[in-house]
Image 1 (cartoon, rainbow, N blue to C red):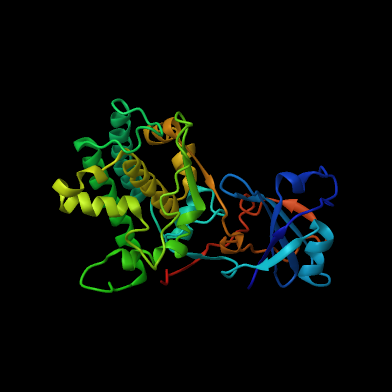
Image 2: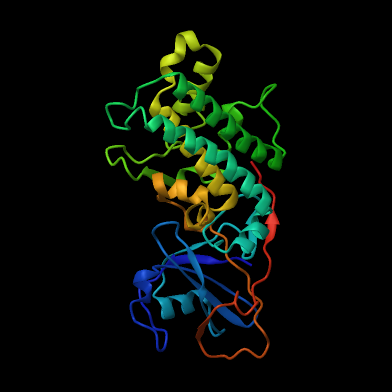
Length: 331
């Protein structure tokens, strides 16, 4: 079952405010044997898809005609995965509730807590460095034994994330061991460039996108912070100056992005624990130039006695949503 995504331009739903499409400008739809199904989604922040704003109506005509007439659909494109399918360990915005996320990604709460603990240590070490080096455009190239220590630790944690995905995919290394020639294959499959972080307290520091320039033609040198880690780790005397503050920041944020991809960004920012408190003290994050065609869509089971009329409801609350079928990551 193939779904579509599009931009909403009108609101025609009975008894609803006529500006719903402005707050939720993205649409996602598919058809069952009996009904058309539409989900509203946002186009800012993490592009959340609101399963609580699910619209269904008895089928008449084509799906394209329906979304055009009811939602003013424009820029209609097919989704990349089938409706109700997900990729193991790769989060996309339709997954908001924790139980749905664990199920669709094939991960557990215990795994997430262990990852949070590791990241908490990284952020605490970065916070400690900030006590001695004020983050500013003039101080970003400052280096010390403490920054080198954090850079090595953070990059080791990133490698741990990468190794998880290489194992999940069954991908063998190009050479004897995994290198950036192998890891760069994760760039598009994990949507690493979707995420942008900013340091809340230090407005002079540009937005942080650790994977922005990474490419397969030069997989080592285009990932500058990771290249710096390899150099200063194996030859400190020559490359000590590579262990800069900005490379540390990028390496820590790279870990935050990997955590978001494996477990979702919502627990990171919305929990009431020490981990989320640390995150919210230092960081803000959002999607940038993401691809809605890569999003997952919930498959719902519509009862036989469902009305023919158009209406809005919450299939999750009514227990109509079907568990995701988890696909393996293919590199």
